[in-house]
Amino acid sequence: MDLKQVAKDTAKVLASYLTYQSVRMVVAQLSETNPPLAIWLNDFSSKGKIQDGEAYIQELLLENQDLGFRIMTVREYLAHDVVEFLPEMVRTNIQQANMEHRRQHLERITQLNWSLPSSNPESSIDSEPNLDNLSS
Image: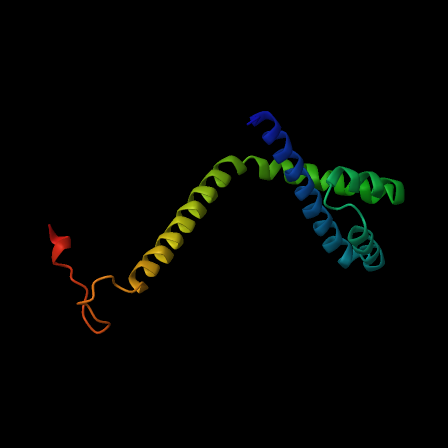
């Protein structure tokens, strides 16, 4: 596994996501100050390459230079403020999510074990499970 490539790919995805969030912020701002431009940007963004932040900004700069620079400025601001908290948040969130997935999986497989028919012909559906062997 090439960790440098994983880091590069992650950084690219994060930059694209911050571009998306920047567009949302600018659209929200424009909705209050310049609704027609907000509608235009929203339409442009729904047709553009918003999944690839760099390609999106290149296209936007060709169509509306001012909006392109505005989104780049907001994106840079977000990156500065958000990236500081990310390493610890990502580690913590992944650890918590993994623990929750493991817990749910364990619950699922233990419920399956309890619901399987017993191979012991003496036990019946109405009988209680024999827990005597578990105390030793």
